[in-house]
Length: 243
View 1 (cartoon, rainbow, N blue to C red):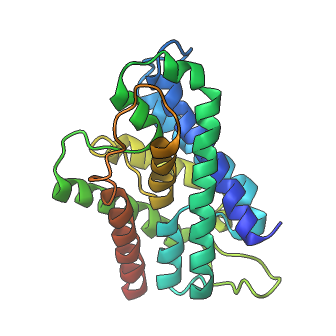
View 2 (view 1 turned 90 degrees about the vertical axis):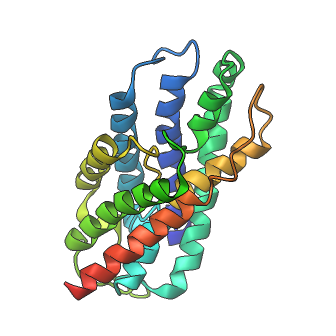
């Protein structure tokens, strides 16, 4: 297993379980229909737990471009590996979204609410205001990356065989609790993407898959869950280095 495959498989599992819990809550005639925000927040936390646990030995389990970039800015990850990691994360997110569409295909067909169908794949604001929405994503991702940097441990060179640095270095369960806290406390404004790959990969799949009665993929908003998390991750890394 290469680091590229580790990130791809870990992110695939993250999206299968994360977007899967949203589908279970929002789509018609599922066993979990209308079970609420707490279920979604807890499901995403467990999705992070599984993805990190599986990918840890192979890639350090970033599973998130904002984390990868933040670690690089903080001097804890090699810049040469940032591009391949991000490609693997986006591809994994696309694969995971496709699997969820296949799994819940009948329930997509039974659902007339086009907004709910889009929400399975990508985030959207509760109140649309690009500046406020961007700020929400910056804050959520800042909390994620800043906390990770304080407990991720010392820098490790991936070219050596000593180990790898990333979310996996702090253990999967603390990261799951961190994501749960962010979802419960900060997720109500934009749905807390806090991960560009988590949003853009599934959004691309929403655009290309033959989903019945779907709406447009809201590309006008799509820059917010990409730029916001990256800014939040960089600010967290810079502040970490200063402090």
